[in-house]
Image 1 (cartoon, rainbow, N blue to C red):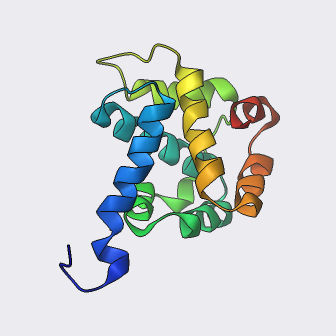
Image 2: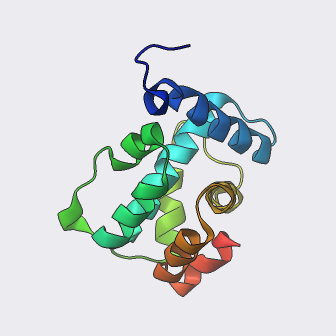
Image 3: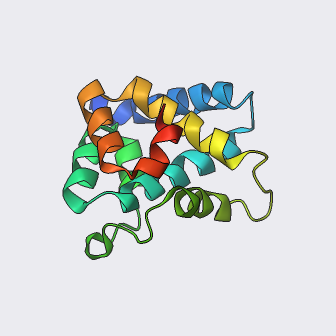
Amino acid sequence: MKVTGLSAIDHAPQIVAEWLNDLEYRLDNKDRSHAYLLLRTTLHAIRDFLTTAEAADLGAQLPVLLRGIYYDGFVPSRQPAHPRNRDAFVGRVAEAFADRPLDDPEAEVAAVFDLLHERISEGEYRQVTQAMRHSLRSLLA
């Protein structure tokens, strides 16, 4: 469906749907709203655990609509978040699910990292993993 005549914009919802479908599959078909909240919250946690330059490098790899979601609420002067350990990272994501707690927060966060690993360049994914603290790297398999 052409709305604007600009393929990057007209296809943006379809690309997000593909990412969400992939994530739902990785989560054993959790519902769409769950997959979206998990993707958004994990992207925000990743962004906030990186330096501003590293966050911008990752943002450049994301499709246009996901890039907007990624940067929503971004405050560069607060980069990187502290503490930056595994518990703090997973805790940030889990907080978004207070109404319906995650069954296995680490596995669900790992599913988002797997999705990123498949959908962004290998070099950028390597930069993200190297920028993360050692305690987080086991989630990034």
